[in-house]
Image (tube, rainbow, N blue to C red):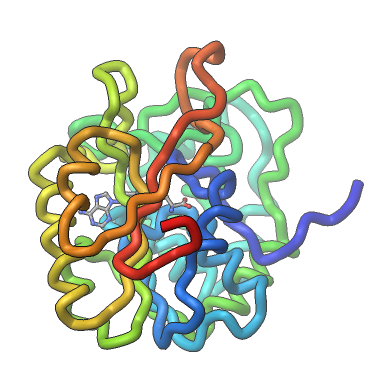
Length: 282
Ligand SMILES: C[S@@+](CC[C@H](N)C(=O)[O-])C[C@H]1O[C@@H](n2cnc3c(N)ncnc32)[C@H](O)[C@@H]1O
């Protein structure tokens, strides 16, 4: 089997933008200084940019999810320990539930990261979901022989992360570090288009209308600082309303729906790419 290109996302992440990467790349500004991604998740666009050499000078990645950010940091700073630990983990149901029951806060970072990657590769649908207490609660999956430890990719990811700043923080803090001509790419939890399409469980607190509103204010403030903003979101009425003023371009694109509990509902759907600069067709 052909080796997949590296570096690429090391986790399967709900709302991951691998399917939309081509459309996002087409709508990048022709040039920009630093790159900021405050909802980095699996980092599909970031890794695509890192594969296309010289696209990024300096990157600032962030996410509210502590375990996710710790995993990035372990890969950046201690990839060999992580690989040694992860390579020793078997694909086994009992082992899965033992690891799932462990409290990540009490583990060393490399072990915490190994737990995160292991659960992601072996759980149902590769989903990350926590309960109200913040405990990972996805059951064992039905993969036959998942690649639990992809050493080649983990080392490639570690290499490109060496000069990258990665922090656990909320999106609005980007206002403190983004400057004129920087590019900020926002990929927040999507505004639900219907009651059944409501996947916002990356965090116990969720991401509602008030957060979407606050995010649009951050986008407007970044525009005032002459930073470049690109945002992906659902084709929901609220998103049209929030970005239909102040010179934002709203592009409609077709994307494959990655996560839906009903397989019949997986397919193409319209999503939005919003920019505060002109793009082709807008
Ligand atoms: C749609 S996902 C990002 C997916 C990512 N672009 C990818 O390719 O995998 C949204 C991310 O926002 C994070 N998040 C939720 N609330 C946040 C907040 N207030 N500030 C920063 N990140 C947040 C979640 O943990 C999740 O990783």
